[in-house]
Length: 310
Image (cartoon, rainbow, N blue to C red; front, side, top):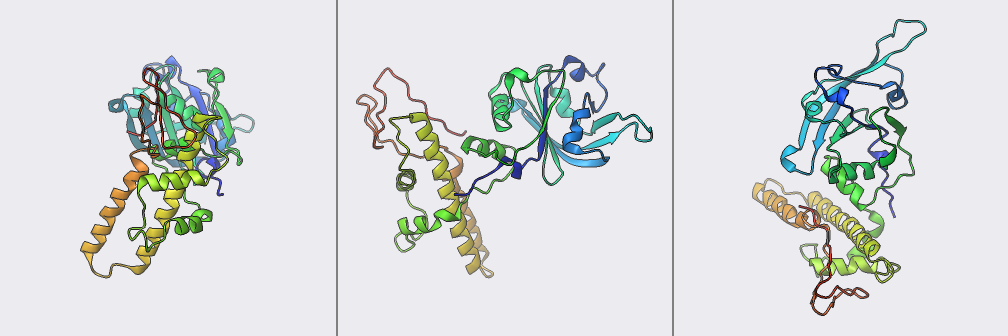
């Protein structure tokens, strides 16, 4: 099975809490981040001008979230001095920084392409927890004094939630895995499924059969996320195969046929975008019954939490 690695999308990061001095427009160094000497680990020693950078501000309140495009410049202000160095990082986009408050989390990520992302999240929010989880940051060791700077390890794999976070950052992750394609085509042959896609409940049931060692009785939470993860991978694999086949056939000059197909893809994508959990639960909460073997839902008065994407 294909492993999706964080190092494919980020080569290094730097993270810290913003101090009051850094976010105060009177006392802060205009358009510069403080204490960036450690960034040499991810930027190197050579001057880099106009690094294309996406700037983000995240809050749990959607109306407070912002995105802007700009650039960074990495340079040694003492370049001509024989014995001293004084590295600085200049940023062109101030509107994101100006929205930040003391205590907010700042994460600078360097992409393998050389581009960068500068992410700021409101302190003590779900958004902050997600970014910390994505980059495996330690809450207790983050301060407003120094940056944590490190390169991304090749062994760091992305789970389902991490891939979702990357998607929200506008980073497209190829979740397809061709090693499952033969199983998918055997389970859903084109003659039986002319559109290529089965019903959601059929697909979910098939996804669960590919994880025979996952037992919900032992760890229900793990089972749910393992099933979601596998279903997403299988769906993307089948989708990619079907789209590639249709594009090979071509549309000629029939614009209407192309638009109709594009619309159908958008509708099918609801399967993968609107809900994270597509396991059908034909259930009576009063009786705690479920159509998933091994899963007994809570009786009235107890809680069942399912996670959905908005």
